[in-house]
Amino acid sequence: MKFLTISFCLLFTQQLYAGQNSFEASLLNSPIKESNAKFRFDIPQSFEIDKAKIVLKSGKQKYKFKTDDIEIKKTGNQTTGEINVSNLAPGNYEVKVKLMDKKTKKEHWCNFKKNNVLKDFTELTIDPSLEVPDPGEEGKKTLAGIDSDNSGIRDDVQRWINENYNNKPSTKQALYQNVKPVQDIILNSGNRDLLRNVIAIKSEKAGACLTWVTEGWLDTRRNLRGIIVNTEARVKAKLAAETHFAGISSSAEVSKTPWDK
Image (cartoon, rainbow, N blue to C red; front, side, top):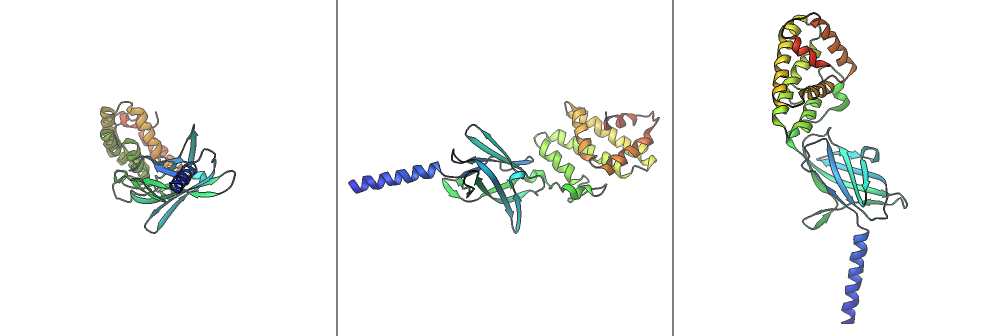
């Protein structure tokens, strides 16, 4: 009986010690329908994060997020971290987390708990509704940018709309409709007749649709234009296009004003 009591005490002490010194991470928002993946880190109170690394794996492809890529916040006893995954395609990823202690410089891989079982990884899902990855700098090298799914909308713009308006389907569709005239303006800045007689009318109709379905539509449209016209070359093309609307008095004038105002 004495032996059983000692064994139980030892086991309890080990479990208590393990609980105080365990390193666990939880994924807070999978499937991800926004720009950031969010984590909670359950770590010992004495542990202060010096460096962190989050690794995502899909097939043979690995994506590494280091300390500077991770927004770490500590509020009371809770520590969280966020990484921007806008440049990753929708799908499933295996994710691992490593944390380094500021004092001891020791590194610890975090465990993830699922169905009361601890594993050194978990699955992160980027929702299919986001459709395409943001191509980043590659998408800024030309006026046209990248449209990997041939939707007629640049991938960076498409991803931004999907991340921010997935829960507002009417606004989302209206924004899609507004993107194409602006892209056409940038790509056809020297074609006066096309700009005045075709693109301007499409822009006016798209703007009217947005005003109908969206409260605060002007700010929404301004934000969209900022995402579309996002390089020096695209700004120059837009400014060149605007010169073709000088003195215009038709209904197309309505479509011109929301560009900047």
